[in-house]
Length: 254
Picture 1 (cartoon, one colour):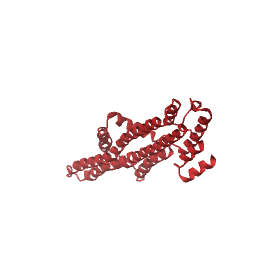
Picture 2: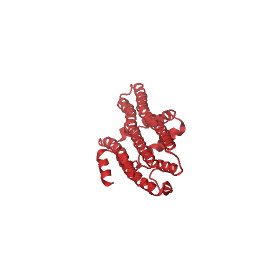
Picture 3: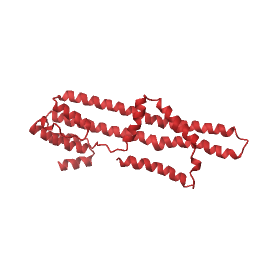
Picture 4: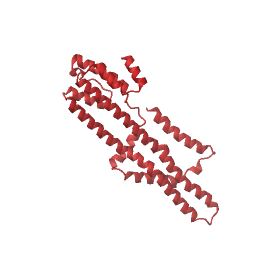
């Protein structure tokens, strides 16, 4: 479980709900009309911004934001150094069947074992990274569509509420209630954009950047093994991708 996502997500919700409850009651903040226009109307509006499979897949992608991803480049550097040592001593076939921490690395290692040369290996794995970026970007765009359309639908809800209120000005007691109902739509739109989908879109984007960095480091390590480079050379090359503190720790432990 990714603690940052879990704590941030539910902490944001609790902060909003807690502030509502601080006034002693939550009823003024509940509006079926506001919920319908923002979340139901927004749902269908976002749906036609993308193909159905991408739209549905975006919810699965959002679920992965709560999972811990294995993108530790420092651990990868140590592993690649270990694999290079085995390959130089016993040959690539000695790596057959070895469990890998990441599917991308597993595919690349299998290509090496099957006899792929460095050029073919690099080209295919880079193509996989490019395809992954496209897939992830499409799903992130669905989140971004929520960020744009949520507040817009909230404003539509507010305008509908204001029209209803202005049409009933003959009853002064209904004006305050009507104004509150109108404002709830804007509030729901702001919550949708800034509590749910805005941070989620950023999280997914950052997760993709970390995974791309991990995969690029894996390619570098695999190329080193293909060239039969010394394990220390591979380790130092991958360590250069790390922040100074992590780099020093890794090199000291080698």
